[in-house]
Image 1 (cartoon, rainbow, N blue to C red):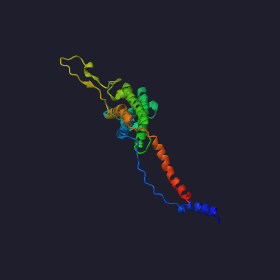
Image 2: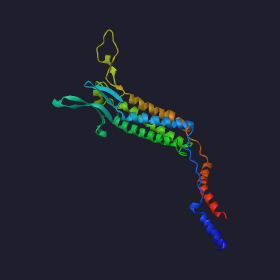
Image 3: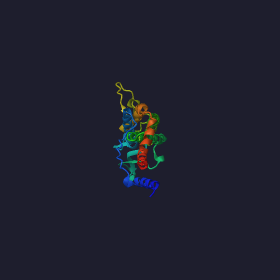
Image 4: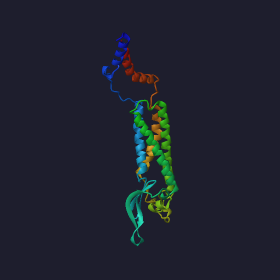
Length: 268
């Protein structure tokens, strides 16, 4: 066998998998591009999104009573409602559910509130999911990306706040007035009792009405305010500036093993 053919055969034999050295790879450590402030921002974003979205779906925005039974509302759900029983008498069905259709929602204001608040909750949940993923994935959230996500949170909180502002506009609907003692009106759940009675020597001020705002309404508004003010501000310091050298390091890391194999094969 000639010398040239022998060296070529040796090179091919060295390149076989059985002759190649096994390279030990170090386990990769999960790194994040978020700062310490960014980690807190991701946690707070998740809390505000979950609080606002949970409050949106729970029918505890408004509490009242009808036929001696407690009644509660949200924008598109209700607990305990009257139906006609035997003898055309009204009886209360004690269960919670949503309205049969979008047009069955008692007022136009509540229909708008349902759409606006739902869009805001969806936007907050999307940003919160991306923020949580940013805690586990490298190069996902840069400083500029964090600020853009903060702007999206501001818009989402603004939508939810607009929904909370629209909600009292539906208090003059017949369904709500029946629950609130027929004294409710837009932005008004109760009225002064002395406006219905004659003047007396000693007038005592009291209020008529059986409705009050529920905890879910305040929770949705608080989550929206926290997303607009706190999360938007924290997002400005959430991410780090990208380093150009990291791309070169990643390329060299991936091609290092192939370079070592080629160098081993080309050795005489």
